[in-house]
Image (tube, rainbow, N blue to C red; front, side, top):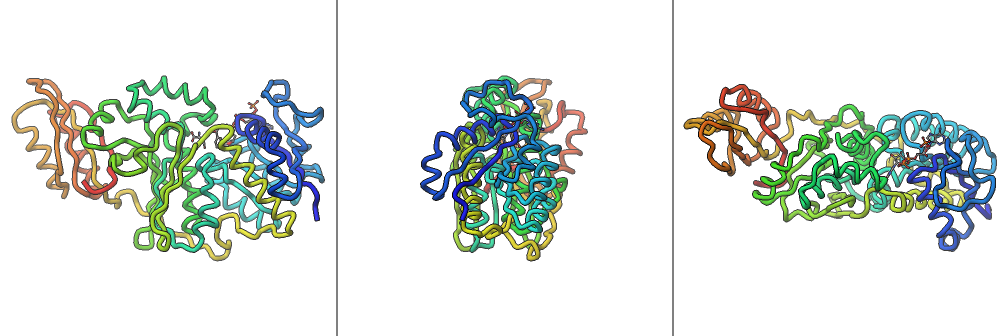
Amino acid sequence: MKNKINVGIIGFGTIGTGTARILINNAEIIKRRLGAPVVLKRIADLDIKKDRGIKLEKGVLIEKAEDILNDPDIDIVIELIGGYEPAKKFILKAIENAKNVVTANKALLAVHGEEIYKAAAAKGVDIGFEGSVGGGIPIIRVLKEGLAANNILSIYGIINGTSNYILTKMTNEGKAFSDVLSEAQRLGYAEADPTFDIEGIDSAHKLAVLTTLAFGTPVKFDNIYTEGITKVTPLDIEYAKEFGYKIKLLAISKMDNGEIEVRVHPTMVPNEYLISTVDGVFNAIYIQGDAVGETMFYGRGAGDMPTGSAVVSDIIEIARNIINDSIGRVPSPAFQLNERKALKIKKMDDIVCPFYLRFMAMDKPGVLSKISGVLGEHNISIASMIQKGRKEGGAVSVVMMTHEAKEKDAQEALAEIDKMFFISAKTAFIRVEGEV
Ligand code: NDP
Ligand code: HSE
């Protein structure tokens, strides 16, 4: 039986630093839980001069990742550099060298997860990725183990801390989008390329991972409908408040008649839904299972220590498997690889929900009846409406909530309305959750 577990971290940035800090500061509690110490043998980073605020023994910090990947004494390689390459090359090399792997790299898993899961299974090593979704929330373990008895019916998540932080500050403090983005970057929440956060791509990466685990299906990342928060305006946030809603970037994955809906977009969520109260960098993931019913998981979705907590939990789990000779006990994608079925992703045109519409229209007689006429022709029925102010001859906001309608009908109606002479700007359009 092994009397210690040696690990090597590649990438000493935000999450690498958090992970190292936890391994060092919490070494005693980890040892008591595991029955053996976890030894942080090496950390590789391109820049070994920068002060990261952590005191390491001489020789631990090195420049070359290869010196970790090829070190026969290292049991677990922890990839925390992010991006596709060389991260993928490093992970596959670690697997080839019969090392277990931990990563928080959701972008890589969303696009190349299948190749990595298969390579790990073929080599008989474990791959842990708890830090890839929901920061410190142990949501991967929930899907792999806690809810393993269930047919999963739906997942609704706020799974990008940066976007939620931005939307919260815009909603509560009326701050400008750009000011808040730079705050989130300074706090270490944002991706190296922050467009991944604000354009919904990071949420879609995470949703691909969750959907694979929940429904036992490979997911083609490009088939996920993805829309970020860059078009959400303070005006729409204010109208949402008037209707009793908050605007959140939701990642939705749900089973519908043998197909799955997988989509990320700004969504108006009723104030009475618990998920609408999730603010700041916090994430929440609501999961409905056929046996358990409704569940919700909440916690910090980004940052060095919460994500480091998730990364270290994977290290401990894999270390337990090494010590107990039970590597491969839980399959990486939550299902046995040969038991998975490729599910069809429902076309966005076919999804059905209520819509929030904000028209910028000239305040003239007959305008409203023309708008409602086109909506009616496309089977869209109006549930409520607000018109603010009067501007004879000028443009005013005409804001509507519709009953449930088909996405295709809504898009076609708006394309028609936006061409009308009395419309002065593209109509704002936000999907709504719950009954209107
Ligand atoms: P950082 O950019 O802060 O850290 C990455 C580090 O890796 C940098 O120090 C970088 O050096 C170094 N690096 C890059 N290439 C190499 C290489 N070839 N060899 C050795 N070191 C290298 O990123 P984060 O810590 O924020 O993110 C790491 C991973 O964790 C990403 O996959 C990210 O998506 C994920 N993640 C991040 C979260 C967060 O809150 N930040 C939360 C959850 C997951 P240099 O700066 O010189 O390029
Ligand atoms: N950039 C990501 C976020 C980091 O803001 O949620 C956590 O995965």
